[in-house]
Amino acid sequence: MKREYVNIALPKGRLGQKVYRAFEEAGYAAPGVMEETRQLLFENEEKGVCFFWVKASDVAIYVERGAADIGVVGKDILLETGANVYELLDMQLGACRMMVAAPEGFRDNTEQTLKVATSFPNIARRYYHQKSRDIDIIRLNGSIELAPLLGLADVIVDLVETGNTLKANGLEPREEIVSVSARLIANKASFKFKSDSIRAITEALSENLRDTILK
Ligand code: PRP
Image (cartoon, rainbow, N blue to C red; front, top):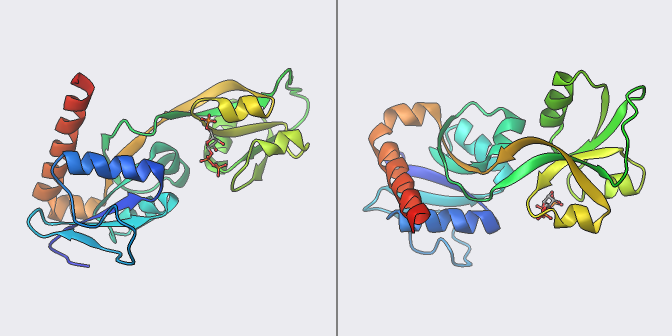
């Protein structure tokens, strides 16, 4: 890893491709980033940036530990991990909502502990704690919508974008916990020592975002 470069962690997957396009439109591109290759680091010497792809849920760890100076990650992951990083910009990509959803017609019996299936145990715990509701968290890594269907949980806490997955599984959105989108984050020390470069990138992304919205 080159120290003089700004190292940028991009989240793998569909969101990551949109995120990289935003960097490209803002004038920060590097050859090969979007190609299938065994190469792992993609540099643009002139711009002084070096991109790499990591699992979306790992971006905050790379940035918090300084392996990446900046990165892009969903607000859901920031809230869940409580990563100690600066949040520089709402990229307004990947917009969705963290919601409580339940089987159609479900009525919460407050005399009983509520069984909540989720991959976001900290977000769910905080939300129900604030409502003083006793819950039992069932932590799953995917296909959360299955849990109420099979009697594993009463409700779920999960991301909802179109609502199609809920509908297809006989579930309905009940309560919105927080709205979520992709955020540009920075390592705290990097933000101090590479301040000019990081500010320039943030400004360029922000301007590009304004232009996109005005189009
Ligand atoms: C996410 C989320 C929901 C779904 C919501 O899952 O966990 O299942 O998208 O989208 P919708 O409201 O547009 O239907 P993802 O596809 O990321 O996979 P996952 O099951 O591994 O979480």
